[in-house]
Length: 207
Image (cartoon, rainbow, N blue to C red; front, side, top):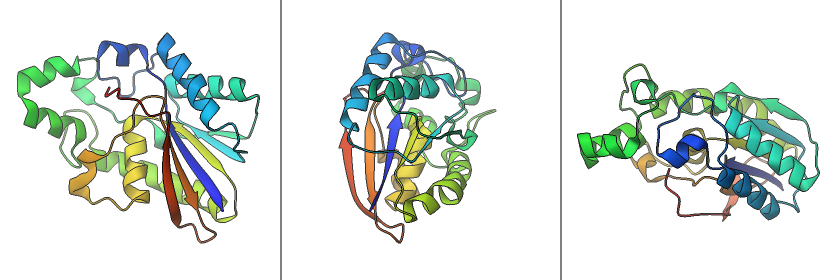
């Protein structure tokens, strides 16, 4: 039996302001630092053989606080495939103001749909197409070998992993979500099949 734990970074400075962040490098908000330390406590009994972190600062800062809280130092690989979605021309805009301007239906298409185009940005399909090869080529072999893996990444890159691991159809991806500082834990058998899923450190934050 092996475990894969997916952790969304803690609340960032732009999350706090309600801004679409995408690939912009921003720091964790002090609340996000506390979330990182809190989620560390929920996984303290897991021995990690490998850690994957996105290129972006908020994910790397989250991992640093987890590592320091737990006093661990496993091998780490920076993986661009797990970067956040590129929000294109919406980057830096206040998502709740955009919602008021375009209406609920259009807003949800922009924010959560599978293949809705964003000017100069990425669809969720595009994020899936870069994240899943990283999982299959790098992580799945370790899980089949009984090793435990941690991924510290972002709302949308983790949603694509959730879609893949839980066999969620394209039209249902808008229903998937993971809050900042939350951990989603998957148990795998020796064939690399998901046996169970648990959620730790869940909050009601929808950013």
